[in-house]
Image (cartoon, rainbow, N blue to C red; front, top):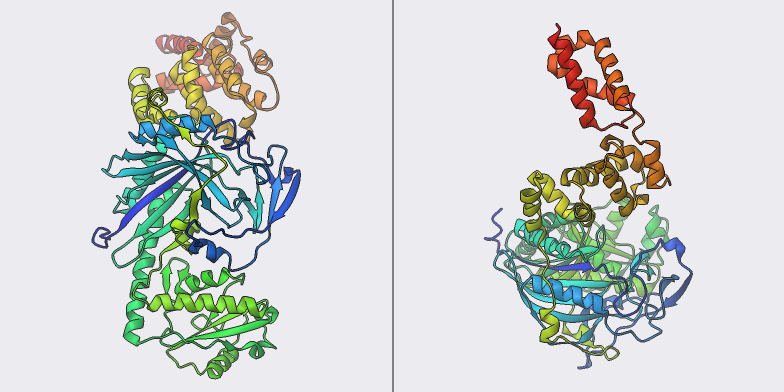
Length: 615
């Protein structure tokens, strides 16, 4: 597909948690806990505040369409700041320094005086109804010629446990938000830029790692489409697919619009009560509903059910809008009969609402009349959008599995930002800026590891980008060879995990002790897996190594090897020097891996040569 011809324009916002000891505006630790460990809870209703101009942000208005009671879990590790019952502390200086380091690495210009702002958020993810954020730097460079427009430090949102229940252990963790210019024009461009920014962030060694610690929001538009923000793309490998599917969605909506215009389609204005039709229905959803309304869409037949993304249809878009009022979704005649709705019921509905063959009828069911009316209005508005001059609405959308998206809310406006009066500004003078050190990029580090340490380039890159890189560098600093350290950290520990060993119980210090013992000849490198397994099971490094320390003298080892070779003389004669590998395994099994493989190999070669020489 020629994305440039389609006018694809994309930019990204990357949100990365920082690995600080304390949260951004309090002294609580940045440790995440299982929600079953919560020690208390409280409830909160959130309402949007007006901007300084007396306006309410449109995204916040959408969230207020239904009253929601939010529940929050508290922990021993959280405080009154997360509860919004105590003013925030000054901005975390450690987080600010990391932010400045990242900014300087991108060649950005720092803001001389950093002011904290409030960003209106009433979806329940912030107890205060807003997120604190501070602009730190502007104008950074990207390899593709684009720019990083802004770098902000902000507090992480609360973690959703389920529905309207949130956990406060994550709320307030320092977060970097990086926003690029709309400088990408293919799905692959977007993924490559995201990978580059992620690499720079990890190069600092000061960001958290793991699922959920970094999220990408992708802004996408095409010619005649609209800017759409897709939030929460956590899997880097899915970014290109997300972009492709959004292009597909916008193209499909434009095609549906063209067909609707061709058909002279329209949107019915009458809210038709059809509750009585379903008094005896077998549809579980409609049977529970207290009020059911119909909306007639003349000329929409077969278009509401048309696929616009894998697993998504125009009807899905309408359903998303209706869900903002608390309903579970909608039914429409493009998909009926189904879901317990019979063909006779569909015929009755069409007759009752006077729908023609080319018309589509939407069914909106609510737990009460107010909810059903709200949902009907939402679907009515979304249907009008499909007919408008701008059939692709500007929206914030949420990524679903495999890369399709669903509607969340309208794009926010400037009204959502206003000054934070509880946090003092922070001045960034020349001395502070010049004191910031720029880290070595991981790509550069990988090249250095390959060149200076003699590692295979693929292994060098793998260890440079690994979470174990700091431990690898510690190992080098105490004299452990690069190949031994990289093999243990990249392969051995992974193999143990695959075998069901809980390697989380193996500390970095224990690994270093074992590797140093191997370098000094106290234990054989072949014994490393067994030693680490014992440590994972609760043993100390010294106890684990003592059990596997070499117990075979050189004379004993020579005798073992001689017996094995003599007993297998026919095999040696047949395989010649190729017998070395198989016999190595036999010897190592005999001595339980407690002897260095290099020593075994040397002695085994000599015995094999004796057999072959005496043939």
